[in-house]
Image 1: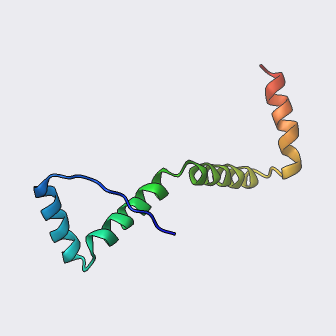
Image 2: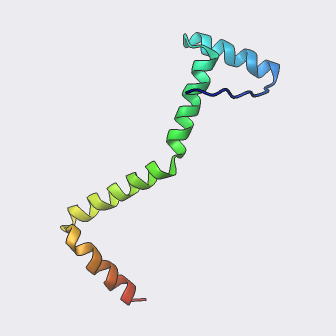
Length: 81
């Protein structure tokens, strides 16, 4: 299912955007969808958190830690507070 978004922009911006879209052989609609998708991907918090956890896990594995060590380490860190 698709939905519509109605936006108002300055005439000059519209003309420039139409021209630039055309230079990429894309419709204005295609270009706006592309830009929106790119923005959502770059700002998707869930995706960013998954990437962060993956990087943390990778660093821990490089240091020799195993999944079974995680709970023990958390307890140790919390007890130091």
